[in-house]
Length: 379
Ligand SMILES: C=C1C[C@]23C[C@H]1CC[C@H]2[C@]1(C)CCC[C@@](C)(C(=O)O)[C@H]1[C@@H]3C(=O)O
Ligand SMILES: O=C(O)CCC(=O)C(=O)O
Ligand SMILES: [Fe+2]
Image 1: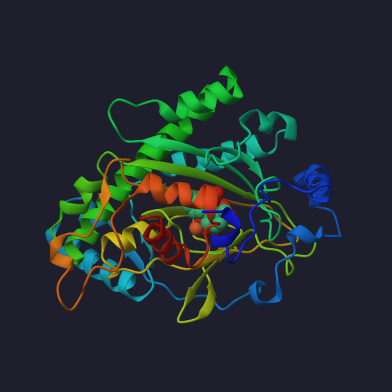
Image 2: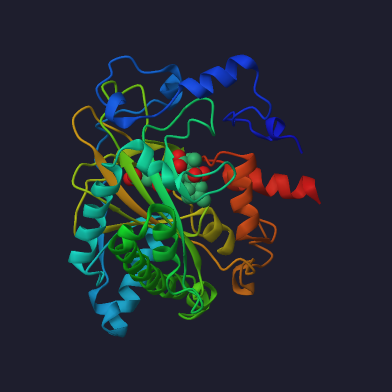
């Protein structure tokens, strides 16, 4: 299947660029230290009017789900937390958790080390340069990857594995790419990912209870998860109403646990209206992704969201994307399939969907639908 004919919403970089696109590609570099002051925004960063964001959408009054009782083993608190989680996931697929048990110092360190990394000169960050078709590494916007609607951000992404055979994957990757002096940097994100993986398994218990498949079902499914950690760094932009930090999308992954700094910029779409999510350092933002939507046979919604930028302040967010081990088949449990709720999506494995988003289709609001059609055509 040729790439161009399935990409309806977003042109990827042409496969064999013309002279003109080659030149544009070479000249366009997202060097945040320069672009943050620039009044002229290169056209590749300007989003079409229908996708442009309003920077101060009304806030969504979302309940904070207290995990304290559940995590300390109180069955009544667990039932109440699972009821609230279930309600939110049926409605829009998005909720906030507090008393989550993650060490505040670890969260502070994860933000601090981000400042350190993204503050380095471009050439040093490029030691971990993300290669075409790969999802790990450093990307300054996606200048070599997409040809328009470029996001106003830099990212550093890496793989995490909860498998007992890979206890130092994150640390090793970061040290190998960036140098031995990044040992402590690697350790912070290794610990952070481990904490996120454990928290997500707890949330999987609540999701299993709320869907009536039992507390252990999804926890066991994700026990040896092979997940993705991404650091998002959004420099200021002098024309923030023309650009977007991260365009509107549903995460193709299973469950996202996001921590945003004090700046604000995350917006979620509920009932066709965009809302800002006020940052709270004590809370994690959790959202359902496409893979869990498929696993729940559409009972729980993958949440549409985006991130805006501003003209004054750099913004940081840390996203842990929970993903199943590569050989796990994403297929809903039999309790969630019957005559009234027939199968909505075909079986797939996470590496198939990941490849789709890295090589064929830029993740957006319709990724799961496009992926299901693509699988059907490939058969
Ligand atoms: C598997 C992934 C692809 C993206 C990173 C993770 C989960 C979310 C995806 C993404 C953030 C959705 C919006 C578009 C995207 C290109 C981005 O702006 O970063 C997506 C990521 C990606 O393909 O790199
Ligand atoms: O930065 C944010 O608040 C959101 C980022 C996001 O949606 C993503 O990385 O998938
Ligand atoms: Fe996202």
